[in-house]
Length: 595
Image: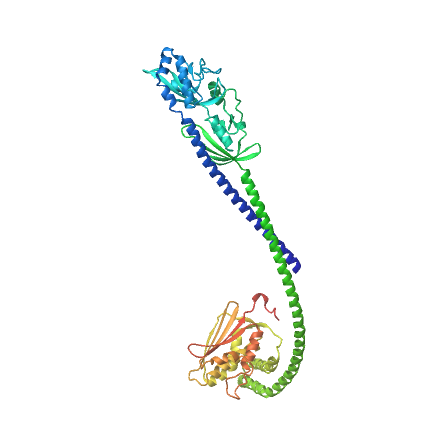
């Protein structure tokens, strides 16, 4: 059984250890994952700040140029009179080379291109109409135009900035500056970073990864496609759905995306002054590798700690087993010596028993005379009562009152029974007699005891006071033995008051909580404290030699305990002592069950 319990304990310890290890590993890997993700997000935000600045710089570097060209006299002359176009083409070509723009061109009020910096190229803008472009319609409305699109003529993407040309409130045309953003994408790609820019329709028109360029972050609506086709913004590009699909959204500008089976952290930011969004996309592989490495290290460490703990525990168990073996051997030797001592003690105890038996026999013979004197003393009161009853009986017979004489002689018979019970005290003292239980009324027992002690009370001059329950108080017991207890207690109370002037005896009988209580209180000097522990011991008495054997209280104690009750003595604050007897009340539903 102990082995089974030990195995169960070891199993529980191992299970708890594994659970703790798993919890610790999970917490560590979770903390590492959160830390790495926070670091990756912080790096992404820093990159977004950097790339947003470079993009804004590239877009705003030539923002002044359309405004300046719109106020050029040569541009106004071409738009007004239609002459001097050759010179304007040369001026635009030279200025474009100096400014580093993709192209500079001038369009009339109908959207036709009159002059262009690429006038000599095979894909020159001259002669083409671009009135459908939003940058033209915005400028014609009097506002500067800003538009990214794939060139309808060259097929090269660029950022178009336009400015209206007006004289005296009349719209003459517009000037356009096209900026090539391809070098910026190349820089992002060479830097090993994944940077994306989307327009207000969610189309990725700038990307450091070519395979994601001209894809949409969300499916386009019919209205969006119609608007894009009308402006010919992205030429013949099919604009498919981007492979970057969101798997978990962390916040409004931070999410986990998956593309081609790879997870990425994508951060976004709205570009200042534009309806565009710039994205930084970082793979999560380094984070996952870091987490896996930490998980592997934590697992190995936990297993090592568990193995070390199990080894140390096994070592302690072996040491404990060796110690127990030594203790068992020592215990065996101690048991052998103890067995020898027990046998020796048993022989000594047997010898003591034999000596004690002889001593008890000798003590019994020595105390026999004293006990006989005690019995005579106990019989004095019943004999005196018998004389009184006998004289009363003769007197009643002489008067012819036979019924009263019959009652008187019946009382004599009862007293003789009581005397027989008194003579049996030697047997009661020697051993426990069989209990003869019957339904007994305590008021009747008290009347009998007072009848037997009436002469004594009168002789000493005791004032008797009784406080008895009006309802019959019934117990299960032997009337003669109960009367014997009451007589002994009344006589002790009377003897205690012989040397005092005021002699009063209070007897109370009550019942509560399934117990009957009899209290006999005297007005004597009380009991000295050192005698309380010996009051109920056989042959203990405070009376003078020859006036008592010290058996009355011992016998009373024996009788009361046989009946399942208690007896105790106390000193009263107003003087005197009280003996209190508590006996269990008879059970009305089981009367006579104990007999």
